[in-house]
Image (cartoon, rainbow, N blue to C red):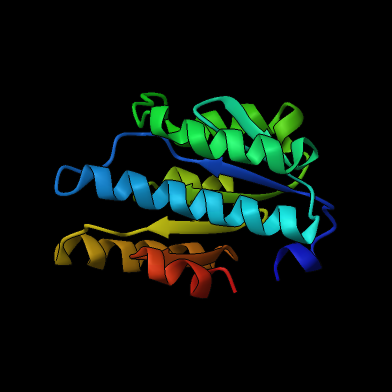
Length: 168
């Protein structure tokens, strides 16, 4: 809905590829990928232009079509969450290039206030909270509140079942 009211005519999807937490790293990584894939599939079906990237590389754009989506989906088994650069810096770099033309959507699993600063002009943050302990979830809630105060549309997604609900 935020996209529909923006002046931008496409979406830029940014996946945070920094390592996941120690409690359930594989689960966190898998859910982040599921969020990205669900969003890509939805945007392709609705014919909404997008560009998706992570770790400074473009993964897929809507002009590539269904076949490219299928190839990207199959290649995600090789995608590594090993980015060491600060996520906000990576997104800033991508936004200054071709991947910066659209309405920004960030998919992250890290509480990082630099990401809020990055989206202060508007955007969406889809936060993957799977595998977080209660004390970490309290931090996520405060982080979401801070994002909301800056006008960022924040959704906390804790499971694959919650993706469709969060994307409404």
